[in-house]
Amino acid sequence: MNQFILRENVLTDNVLLIADKGKVFKGNYIAILKEYKYQNAWNDKETILKFRSEKSLLNYLSKNYNDEELEQIILN
Image 1 (cartoon, rainbow, N blue to C red):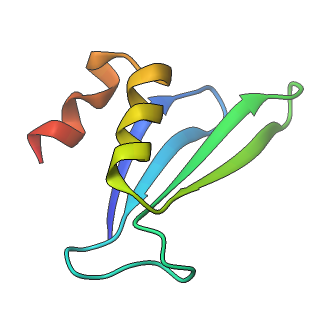
Image 2 (tube, rainbow, N blue to C red):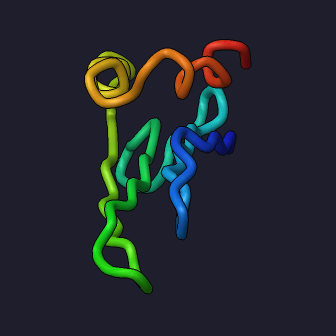
């Protein structure tokens, strides 16, 4: 499994987990995205998104993240 930090927030970081080549996560998912949004000064609200296809993952990332945040994924 490869792990990438997409966006660094004050309390928590948005993390993208990608399964190794030829493997999948439980439920036949190829990628899991853990996003955190501000809730209050002590907590962030966690949203977990799961993707079964590379196309849907790339569409979501291109709409919600800028090129600088996605640069480290493209380089690897």
